[in-house]
Figure (spheres, protein in one colour):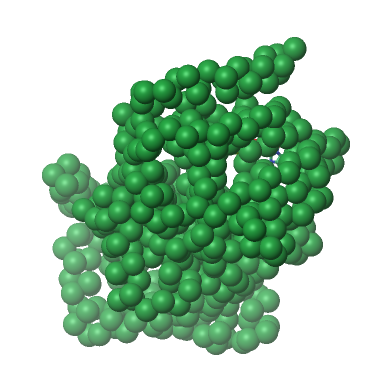
Length: 254
Length: 252
Ligand SMILES: Nc1ncnc2c1ncn2[C@@H]1O[C@H](COP(=O)(O)OP(=O)(O)O)[C@@H](O)[C@H]1O
Ligand SMILES: [Mg+2]
């Protein structure tokens, strides 16, 4: 049985004047430990899709099962890393990472131990006393990752996390994320609008169509890991996916 | 700092000069030295200390009540739209009223008592605190709430560990403003009857025709305002800036 069994018939945003259908007929199975990348034109409904998987949005028609049970609310088993991150400016790095553990009522000593373990995993122990506004973009991403990992979830839902970073930082985080994925065996669903990034990270790359989004194409990527953007063989995999995505983007201009 | 020293020295010299050319009679325009003597005498005889303590105690009680009620009102207004649309609009209206206008009403309700003065201090600060709690909560980025929810924060935990700290930039502004309104209303209220306190010190000066005591009391009232601003709210603002960086400083 797959970990996530997704059957979304449709998702509609209804405003006071108009209604907007963003998702339509998405049927997917995601296995435990998979790293799935979703690529799609911006505004097609990727964030909406992740919100549904997280359990933050239950206003859709269809059925999404997690371990065989319908998702009705958000849970610490599926941690979302939002595009805007949502790190708390009033807490320092370590307390940000400890936040969820504190909500669970885990005692201080134990919290500290867990937080340091994950800060170490993302190479941020030295910065544990910093406040968020003093960190670079890449460091913020790593804090968000450590904070999500500290909840020890089964699934990580990542929404275009590296979109605003410079190329070098992004390359480094691609490597780190793959290392962490191999070490922790999490199931990761990673959303991006960058096809190279998707191929670099994913076992599988799904291309979403323009809104209303459905899965337009699915590609298996079986290159050796850890991969980098310039890894051998990667560019050949990118080309057909890019063609699919370009078709969608050009459709947007018509 | 250096500029300020020069400025105040010049001001004192000017004051002394105006005094020495005797345009106005000395009992209406005392010398700086006479005022200094009045201050020293006031502290020596404990009159000032008592007045300061009495006034501060009232201000703190009034401010405390305002914080408690303001928090409850602000949270209710944010939580229930109907309360915002009705009570919220009323608050806006009442806020425009100078708090001393409540004095006749308070006297009839509470008599010439301490409660009357505290009531006026509360009416001075309650609504600005209410509005700051409300707008602070209203403008919290949704992302904080979503991530906190994902990490298991609910209800009281959400309020205490997420909503209040996330609203802190606006809350500090509101508290600071609320305090200054409470303090001003309080002194105004104390002017009106035998009440001990700093306001009464001003009135006593008038009754005794003692201008140096009046000026001394004015100095003390200003000094306390500045000290609270600098040491209580100044420290809160500095802490906020350290944590939030520019983003938080913008709100101040
Ligand atoms: N809460 C909402 N209410 C109404 N429309 C929304 C809401 N959230 C997103 N949308 C719209 O739905 C579409 C898909 O949005 P989103 O899922 O954020 O796309 P993506 O993440 O792929 O860029 C966009 O056109 C967006 O404007
Ligand atoms: Mg998005």
